[in-house]
Length: 254
Image 1: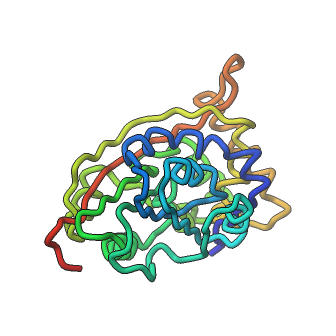
Image 2 (image 1 turned 90 degrees about the vertical axis):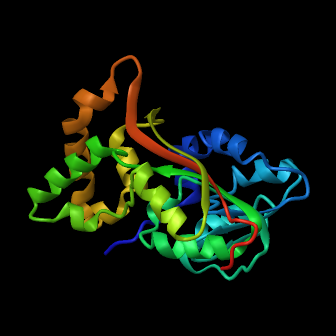
């Protein structure tokens, strides 16, 4: 199975809206000067910088060496780690994550790692793709791949849970959930949907030969245009976001 690859230059051009839209979850985190915070899935560090600017001591992690290099170029303490097997134990006042958790299939491993990394009373605040996220695009890709006798659902890299399911998971791993909400966020794109696919959907496009991928992306573009394109507004993606704040209880073991 092809894994998602990240190129900081391409990310800056096609995906900067991801970190730009993270202001709301930073506000929910309410970072305080002197707090030690883990930024789980920092990308190129653009949003991490806002935590540092708030006076926090931030450790930024990402699974992509390329993105970590980009974050380090900003002067951040960025490290390559697997979010499902973090090495930290009762070290952080908060764990923060934006637009990352839907990329990690081992959601239980992530929750175990985050719980262990937090101090008792520490908070876990995050936003990621929830149930129904980019469904129009995903179904069109499935259809295009099916015409090529490829099972798109089997190659789908994303984990998009409902709020109810994720709350149950958080509670099962020992967290107290303070708030959780699922909401639609139709998101304007800087280019067309074919460019979005080439940036975000490597595992799906990687199921066919490289020479055929642009043609598939354009086929998907034509299929979704009636729903996701407007001559005045351009292209957008049908994002759905799951945002939550949870706490590791003061007296919990883990």
